[in-house]
Amino acid sequence: MAINLVKGQTIDLRKNDKGGDYDLSMVTIGLGWDVRQKSSGFLGKLFGGGQEEEYDLDAIAFLLDANGRVANLGRTVQASNGRNIGLYEGDVVFFNSMKHPSGHIWLTGDNRTGAGDGDDEQIIVKLNDLGQQYQKIVFVVAIYQGKANNQHFGMVENAFIRAVDGKGNEIAKFSLSGDSTYNGMCSMVFAEAYRKDNSWKFRAIGEPHSTDNFVDLLKKYIQ
Image 1 (tube, rainbow, N blue to C red):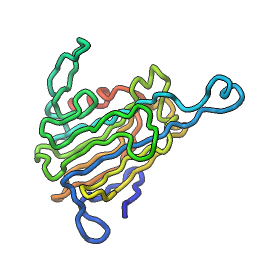
Image 2: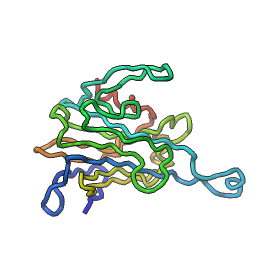
Image 3: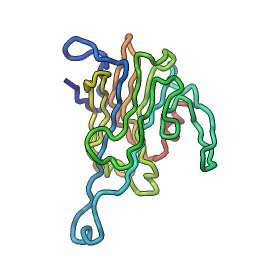
Image 4: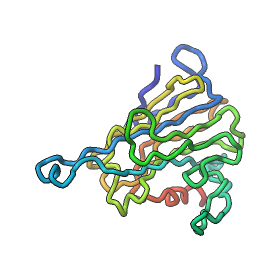
């Protein structure tokens, strides 16, 4: 049975409650969310009040070394629109660099609405194959252009991050619903996985930040 985590709680990803081992050959880190419905009074109905048409939450992973730092920031490439993109093929997995050079961690795609049941975004990690130089993975969620669109985690409900093993067994889930304390918060360090005692641990964090640019959070891990 999956463990429902509370903020700050840590579990061993490998051991299940039946004394066996979870399959960490390919772990899915799934993230999901819903957008709180707007007020639906008379004026709301008259002018089309309801859920936001687009509310783009992005999943990002930072791969850290033994010093808690992102060692490889990748390279800069030129996109088709002529803009330069940094952090390409480095130790940051995000929407412009969706697969890590090792081939052992990747982002499956981008859901712009959070509509429907199940995971809205997924990061797949082959924990058993990930090189020893990687000691921790930090999972971040950021609202794309949240500041410009006045969108924040106070408007998000039923947000969750969960870990599912290679056989489809849900290991753990950490849920979070936005309230007034998250107003103005456009990104979040949601959880982390790290090596310890020849296994992998998973910790629920839920640390909100006002920035909508994950690079601002990345700075902590490169200084």
